[in-house]
Structure formats: structure tokens, C-alpha cells
Image (cartoon, rainbow, N blue to C red; front, side, top):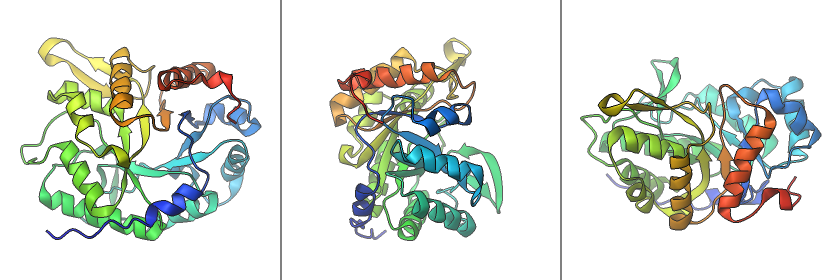
Length: 298
């Protein structure tokens, strides 16, 4: 398959707009919205789930405008379904484009997954088999999204619980090929790497060492659930707890291998008090070598 050259101009616009600092940030969730509207939390940046702000006008966008006056913002989507063989939902993409043009986020990201079948959305990020056919679909869809948005898209590695028999390309090679063929960037979810490695028996350092480090523009950290014991044990990516010590160790290895990157603490269910969330961000900041509380980053 012939590869189109990377569209290198796509990254220049996002580099100019509300840049995300190489520091720790947190996901912006409804229970903490009033604090961030006031600009009181000490954190370097925040990330939204894009689809939560798709409705035009109204109080949510007004609140987001207030947050943007205090913090750089990135957009993280869950509904584009980049792996769909039927292509990208044009209404969804148009609405995302409107949001991105309105708030000019520093980064825009989505998942290496699919979530639409015959026009029906499923409430999950479904895994893909890693084949040349699927890679061609991803290249086509990512290229279309980047062309529509006029900027680079970051693609996040998934958490996985099984390996498709059809997969013939290691995930890190699949992502590397996607970067080469589209000029996209990567969102490296360290918790997902650890969860997938434990479930599918591969080495986390091998994964990180074999992705293009220069393409990684953001890192995610989150909590997970350990279900069962021994051979029946399964790790489940839940975003519902503190970052596990083993995941912190993989994060420190990633810092050694690819260097510091903007790092987000994701916490989407059983959302804790804001102090707990900010303490996790402070841990990430310290591991990058800076105490977040020592400087005014808002």
C-alpha cells in the first residue's frame, strides 16, 4: 500500500493555539466545574471530553469559556470511531470541528478503536485487529479528520483484554505506521499500556521503546481494577481510583525513554474530592522533576 506523505503543516496551527505546558493537568469533570470556573485549583491545564460540550450555546459552553480564561484546555474525544470501516460520521465530525474552532484547544485527541456499527453507537471503545486492512482504514479516517479540523490529531493507545487471532502487527508497530502515514501524533496512555501488558503478556518497556517518541505529545495516567487472581486475573481500565504504584513505575520509565510530556490524570467514575485529584497531579509533577505547588501555573 502506498503511503501518503505526512501532512506536516497540520501541527503548526495547534502549536500556536493555547499551548499545553509540559506539566501535569487534570480532567475537567462536572463536580469540580465551579472551582475551575473560579480559577482556584492549582493545576497547569485541563482536558475536556469533547462530546460533553457539543450542544451549541447554553451554560456548559459559558462555563468552559470561564475555565479557558484561567487554564489551557485540550479536547479528548470518545465518539469519532476512528476504526470504523464505514468511515467517519460527518455530523459528529462537523460538530467537533465547530467546537475546536470555537475554543481553540491546545491538543485534540481520540482513540485507536471503533464504536459505531451500521450507524448505531455502542457505549464502549471497541478494540481493533491489527492488520494491514484495518491500518488502511485508520489511515483514511485519521487523514480525513485532520483535513477537516486543519490540525494534527493525537491517537490514544487502548486498553485491551484479549488479542485477536487475526492481528499480525504488534500494537506499537501499528501506531508507528499510523504516525508515519498520516503525520498524526500519539497520546500515550501509560495505564492502558500496563493493563494491556498484564492481560496479554508483553513488556511495557518494549512497547514504549518501539513507538516514535517524538510523536508523543501527551500522556494519560489513571486507575484500574484488578479482578480475580492467578491465571484468572484480569486488569480492567476503570478510571475510578488512584494511579497504581506499578503504573507510576511505567510512567517513570516512559519519562526516561521519551522524556517529559504534558501529563493528564484521568478520573471518570467514582470521582473523588478535588484535593485527591490534584494530589495525583502533584505526584506526576514531582516525577517530572517539578513541584506544582511551587509555581503559579493558572
